[in-house]
Length: 95
Image 1 (cartoon, rainbow, N blue to C red):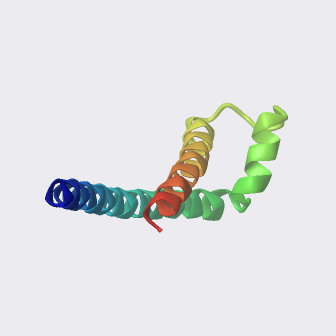
Image 2 (cartoon, one colour):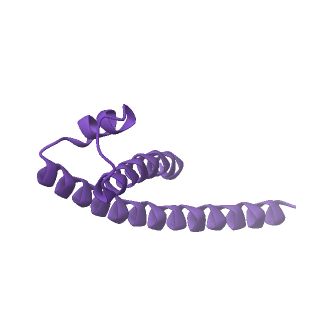
């Protein structure tokens, strides 16, 4: 009986380590994607001489035009926010 419990525990621990390894890999993928999003946002900020936060407020308030760049900027900002949230959850799971 002890052997069986020990075997189940080892099997559980192996699966736990595999899950953590997978989550760490996902965390790294999220980090790379987020670095790309941040770079794109910085390019928009430089191009339009406006912070992303200021842009989002103006965009949400309808005070900014309908240029394609603005919709891309908005999308990248929202993606980054969503990915940060998910990455935070992954970080909590692997700690």
